[in-house]
Image 1 (tube, rainbow, N blue to C red):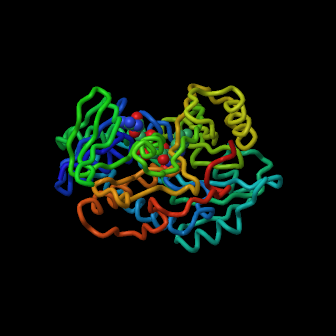
Image 2: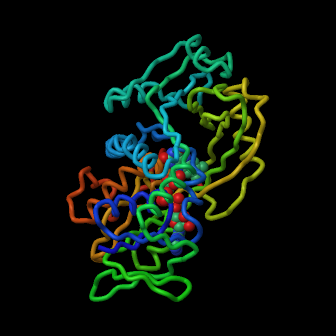
Image 3: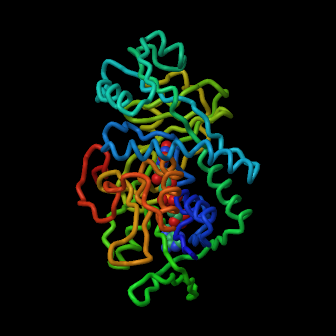
Length: 378
Ligand SMILES: Cc1cc2nc3c(=O)[nH]c(=O)nc-3n(C[C@H](O)[C@H](O)[C@H](O)COP(=O)(O)OP(=O)(O)OC[C@H]3O[C@@H](n4cnc5c(N)ncnc54)[C@H](O)[C@@H]3O)c2cc1C
């Protein structure tokens, strides 16, 4: 079965790789270069921020996906020799007396329900675990099992794995329209006027999926939600855990880089970093972890998360359009959910029943805007 995958982000690349393993013939069609958009820009935290705010279906899907990470990590390494720096660095939420929102009760209940180890640290334990934290910290919640991956490397390794597996990658090729015949999707038209024939088409174009779907008469409310990131450099190990507080999170890499993320802006496809947001991220960092004040500020960037009104992805076939499938709208959780999405979608497209309950992710689910995890205010 030849599958035309639109989009060479983490969702498109991994799904193509998994389809290839099942004997399909995928072709990845990417407007720019693979892995350069949201999947490159993200922070690579392998757990949703505040997972208790989502319906349980998301946490079940997170479990399913995370269980596939060890094999993905191993397989990519064996195939490509590249390390994706997948590791369990733990995630800490420090608690301060003036916290705007205190999630403690929900965090404890969610961790018990989904079997995540949660350690409740007192003030001294919190400072011992993270010496750069403000001395005003009252304590902390610590999930030692939360992992991270260096997502640009995940994308490089996925691309290399596709190449080595002989999967066709068409870069600098923009999909413009869907070809249909006899009521079925039969391929795609490209901006250069050429076409690609396929037995099935998978829309995995990240933030641009909503626009493409609309052109094809499909309502798919996926919109870009811009996220800005600032990169610090300090001594390796200075920060041990991912640390999240009200307005920012910090993600330490093994080489001493620390990502500060991330804004949530509903500003369309407006590119570039802005001074007020960068300053807000830095101020939030210095407030929670003044021990990082001397860290060098080395870079800043942004990306467009494929946002959805309820914070959940859209997965599955498009009703009434045989041959057309969707895997998009992963919003803040595309890196966490990528292996799960690839496994689910590849098997589903090859004729198996979905292994997880996909009711909450179907394309025709009712649209509702949930302030907690959906779109931010404009
Ligand atoms: C600042 C920030 C922080 C984040 N942090 C995390 C995190 O810690 N953990 C986590 O799990 N997730 C995180 N995310 C979210 C995660 O990065 C995304 O959910 C995920 O990368 C989406 O992957 P994708 O493949 O759907 O989209 P993308 O990576 O955007 O890929 C879509 C691709 O489709 C291509 N395309 C679009 N239109 C066309 C067309 N017409 N023809 C051909 N190609 C086309 C684009 O060029 C692009 O390469 C973060 C995102 C941002 C921006």
